[in-house]
Amino acid sequence: MVEHDEETPELSDLPLPPLPPGISLPPPPPPPSLVEDSDFDDNGKVSEEPEADGYEDDDSGSTDFQSQWEKRRTSDPNLASDSKDSMYGHIDRIATGEVGTLLDRFSDRFGSELDREIIVLRKQQQQDIRSVKPTVELIAGPTLEIDEGMDETKSDDFIEFFDVVNNLLGDMPEDFINRFVKSESFVLFESVGADPGATDEDTRRAFFVMINAELGELPEDKINEFVESPGFEMFTRMGEKYGG
Image (cartoon, rainbow, N blue to C red):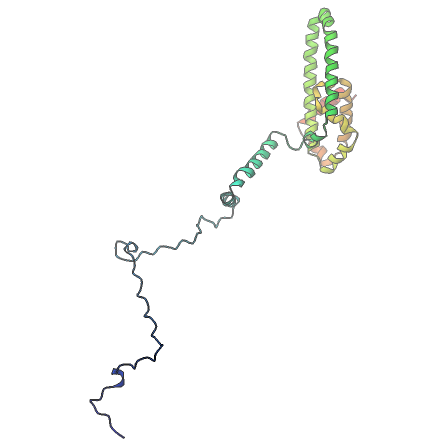
């Protein structure tokens, strides 16, 4: 074997042979990006800020209704007006007794024919009063004033009685209401309900007899609730006057 001379340079020190034609070395990697001055804090350390991903942490762990409502109202502004107005309007109607009464549920059944009958009835009553009033005033003026005051009190009692019955029937089950609306009794009910204070004594007596019979068809629990309610006192008072 031929021994290498100590002065012979090693292969690693020799330059690389040239590349074949058409081949080039890849570009060197880019230098590391420099950190801007604004990213350093007062101590010269790089400040780390969380990346914004479009999600805001608003204590979303809570699942109560108010938090969920606020999120929905923010995403859809229409909910803030339409739904809230509808909700509060409904609460107001419940508080004032405008929801659940029989007349409110079936007010669309009051037609122009009934209105014309009421107008004709009132006109006839006014004409009768005008023809009788001068004679009554000459014969017994003071007595007439007392009678008018008593009639007004009686009329107010009957109006209150109708309100009691109206609200009571409005709280009945749906099947009871549907049956009552389809019955002949409802004709008298809506006629009296148009103006309870203008009804005569015969109509009021017939109304009480009808209502007394209808209330007898109520479920036992509803009857017990009505007996314990303040409206039952008015019912018994009307019974003493018109139930005989």
